[in-house]
Amino acid sequence: MRALLNNDVIVSLVMNETDGTEIGELPKGVGMERLRFNGSGVVDLANLTAFWIEEGSFALHSVRVSNSHYFEMSYVDRKRLVFEDSGFRLKTLEEITIEEQAAKIQKLKNILKIKLRNSIGDIQDQNMNTLAFVCALIVYARLQPAALGTFFDEIIPDIIEIFPLSTWEQTLKSGAKDLKTAMQEYYAGLENL
Image (tube, rainbow, N blue to C red):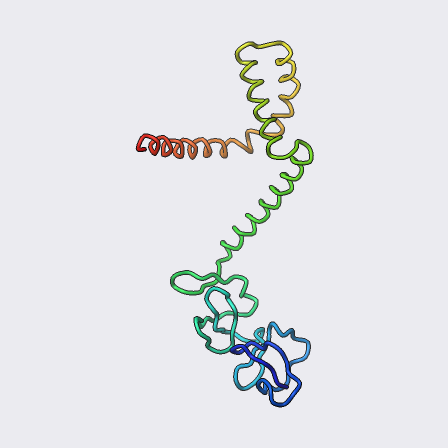
């Protein structure tokens, strides 16, 4: 079997006897994305315990290529690879758990965003609803009209269930501190203009 190669990557197989490089037989049932030609034969990346890994592309090689680093790992670990100043390393289980948790939270946020958009409207509509609540609170705090009092009495149970203190207390405390710090930096920046 002959093939056109890019370093050790098999780009395509060729049918004539003059083009490309003789690579020998291909293993059955293995996709081309996992196969490399190491100079003496075709190897399956899944069978290797170390690789030459390109910076930037994270492409795996069975032989040294330019801009690559030698790294010992299994093929299944490739999704855990990260590159730092000191070179390649595998993400820790803690890092993977944190990323998975963040992805699950983002998925929930996306579902919530869609539900809010479908029930309230786009972000402008949502901001208008928030502004309407704030203005109603200002009017009620100052004038205390009976109609607004009745309105708030009716929605208070829903608000308590929407934002239970047990869920939001720590977030709001931390958020208030972070907002205070950010605003102090902002005010200091304004004074220095």
